Length: 333
Image (tube, rainbow, N blue to C red):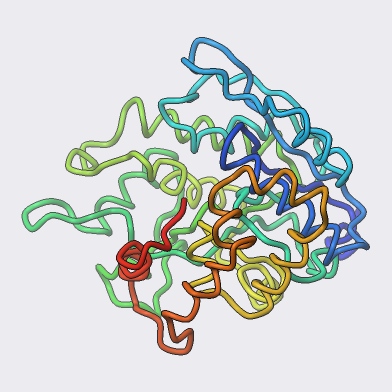
């Protein structure tokens, strides 16, 4: 039997690439992986949705210079067909893309992730899946006369025959969102993308197509992936990440969400890595065509945005940071 520690150096990295913003982010992801994790022995696979009935516009990465640069950085672009979500719910790409991976341990990362440390040194136990805890209480939003957190989440666990009680964090008070298993879908992992992806798709479609009555007042878009994800992880014997995974959303990866937010709130190390990997001429030639990189990185506006905030005393809500950036003309998506 393979011990989880033996798998730590041998896993594939998956992200999604499309034309536009995701193409630029994929360049930064690939460049930062090579810059900070030269010992990474797995494959960097970029899943590319293909044209079809669920995409009114061609979603593929069409710029040949970007494709060539990604190949030069060691990324493999593999196609997949959208059969469930497509343009109507692009977050579903991460669910359907799992089907193209070889059935070996994997780590999924949202494309807007910067690698700031040695990814190969994180001691994953791929038999116990987990996901990012860098999240806010975005779902569900309870109503005064509607069902509470417990009723809503329990209805979902019951739908899939799962034990609800064992998913709870009993150190948190009843009817407080942190008590319930809830992740950001910016990263997640498992030993089998086939098993994980099949279950993720099944659960997401069931919730979307036939939500329990307790969800009648709830909005599923854009939260569907984050509603299904804890159910998938719990069903496969996983749970909240332990201290061994602290480098994810820590000193090894940075899920920055937007370049403006990176400059506003992330560490000096994250800014240092970003600017180092954006500096080579071949990278600059591609990224300068994208306004956020042109303005924030190459024209220096990122440091002006950064000066607006005290990173030791940031606003509690992300929206307040966004509002301040927008007010001062530094918000670029």
